[in-house]
Image 1 (spheres, rainbow, N blue to C red):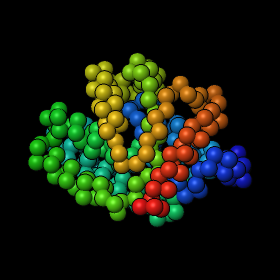
Image 2: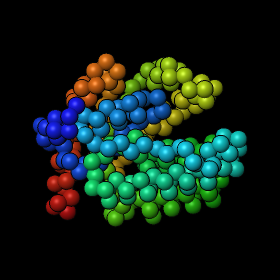
Image 3: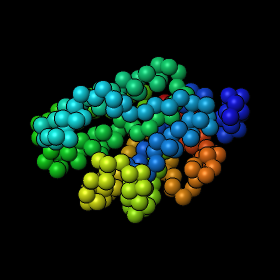
Image 4: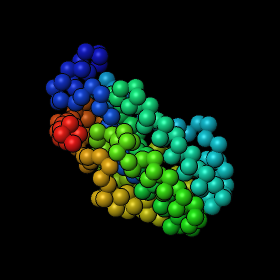
Length: 230
């Protein structure tokens, strides 16, 4: 699709050219595919999690308790830098997974499973709050939260066949699924648009993502009105 056509789509639905939209949801829900389809539709850039070059990832899987704090601090620093980069660039991004999921889901889960000490967890959460949960941090215009039933999600995890995921017990995915449900119910850092995976069909019709644009635009419009008046 030509750049001009993409700008017409943004204008049609009222999506600002400088918007920053984050896509969230549990592992296997289709965040990466949705992120790329939405970015392509809007003519936006894609922001993805950087895994290559992470010095702690392999060591973490060898010894969770030893390296969990280091891994989470690394992710926090990288996501913080990426969040600043998107806004300094002038927006126009769709982001695959938010900085908020690190503390609300993964660090908390490691702590509650005994894989992160009390001191490390408190240090991590205090650092997160000092860096992110302030009026000065550039929060996204919108978080699009993808959701489906647990059976649908676990089927998708099995279908994509990643070796590490295939070896992971079903109980882990069920725990993660429940944590995401609780997390999104209390999330307030930016507006949330909850989208069922049944509302679009990216694999067969990438244009089906358009069904969310009108709702997304309304959320962004309301937020920016509040920011202007606040």
